[in-house]
Length: 155
Image 1 (tube, rainbow, N blue to C red):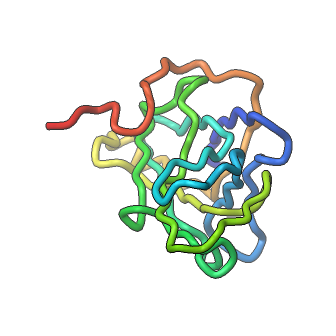
Image 2 (image 1 turned 45 degrees about the vertical axis):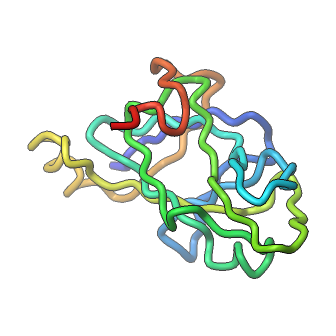
């Protein structure tokens, strides 16, 4: 049995992919405007994680070499309440002096899911018998919109 991750894509070029050679799921660029030194690059997906799970978002190892920017903070954590149809995942970047040449569909980031600290005993037990993840592409997600990066508050 695989853990099902529901994915709403803004375009065909932004579909996440699970590599046969790796354990993480690749995410692709949706927006290509990266003129600012700091910014948020849209990844063109809204994702509904199973209850009790969270996602760890990180740069791909080749992102800096290919595009001359990296993720602010090194990693991002996305909890399963960030699952509404308009809760689009974004990549917070820092540019280091060069022009960035990003095309829609370029692989920029990657993520993996893991149990969250709020996972129940039964969710943890189910995870033990899970044999990976399955991406299920949907037209819409059923969750409530949460509001974007930083929406859980400042304090």
